[in-house]
Image 1 (tube, helix red, strand yellow):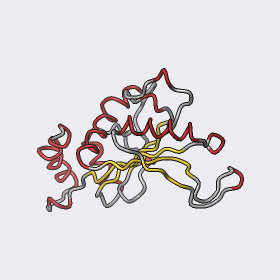
Image 2 (cartoon, rainbow, N blue to C red; image 1 turned 90 degrees about the vertical axis):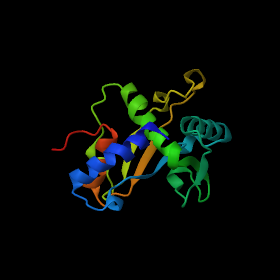
Image 3 (cartoon, rainbow, N blue to C red; image 1 turned 180 degrees about the vertical axis):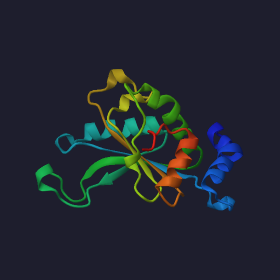
Length: 181
């Protein structure tokens, strides 16, 4: 079992329940899944760039990436409905806990002038989205083969009912959020 998940079960779950004043053990929020998403800019959509993006996502997450397609046509970006525009990976279970632990303990310390994550990235339903502009902060990426920096979007989905519950959970799990005002 993952160290973070073990710690969540043995200690963090109790602390979160106490802080949120939840009596029912099943109502204490937890992580459900982590979705890692990335797209190719419309000017650079070709097989070579799509393959490179898929390989990057697969090396970062350790799981096969799924193709995302455009839902509608956007003429200004030269995108047609059904066109392949990116990839996504949904992590659950052990891989989710491993990825979360890696992001918190390895990736964020590699950011330059990092002062914590914004509290404005909660969606109102207990989910949190992180935008990473440079994929080379992940240790699995071989930097000598990079031709173009890729950005990633990481969405952490929880069972929390609102932003406050999700914030309490993520702080206890070690996510470096900025201080509340």
